[in-house]
Length: 267
Image (cartoon, rainbow, N blue to C red; front, side, top):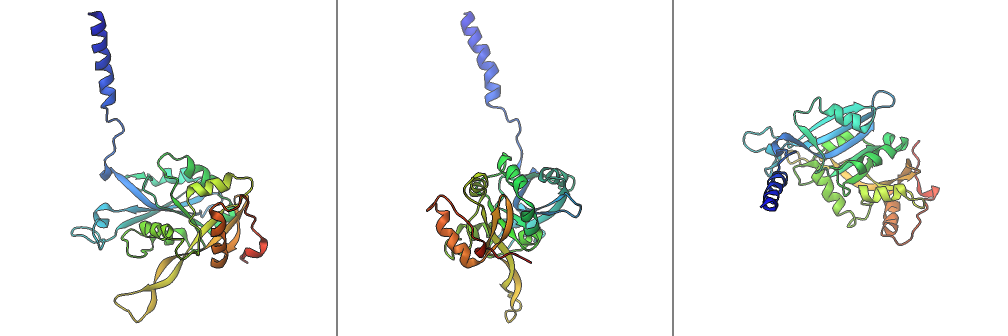
């Protein structure tokens, strides 16, 4: 009888732990990030982090403007800090919801930030338990906060549109499809250097209200790449050079040496 009593007591103690809902977070309490921009802050030694946050009520429709909504499918905010973690923590001071990173599609770094070094960026985004390793990574000569806020393509959420550009990057073959997993592999390797896709804002769109004015709307273009050496950006690769890199990105050879003639240094 004592053994049966002990078993019942053990079951009573274990069952509550198996059915617990501790740590539950409702979706309407989260600010879901779709794209992230990294740039140097205004103060020396600081980082500016921009986040593209989805508005669920406005992004659920085909046009992004359902009845009762604001008509803006995204909400963009930016904060500064001494590190990426500090900037994210400061974001909690202005965001009415807890920032949630698991649905992030894209990380865009400015040229100035990439040239200074991406050690902190790789370390943070690979250790954060909410972030996925298949998140796309890109470098831009334009401001990252403008890139992630530009509505591109047929999608309501800009981050999702750029995500689809990366998914089909081998069709035009003008830029590599760099994600956090491939970036970490090249970053930690002693025999390879990182090559990250380039995104830029180009006047490619045509307004429906002014069809005669071609290029009146800026769109995000996936073309070219940024070349790195020892975690620091050293120059740009043209679209033709990036196409050549795609042959090596499949693992055809173990070592990729970037010749100086391929690198277009900016003056």
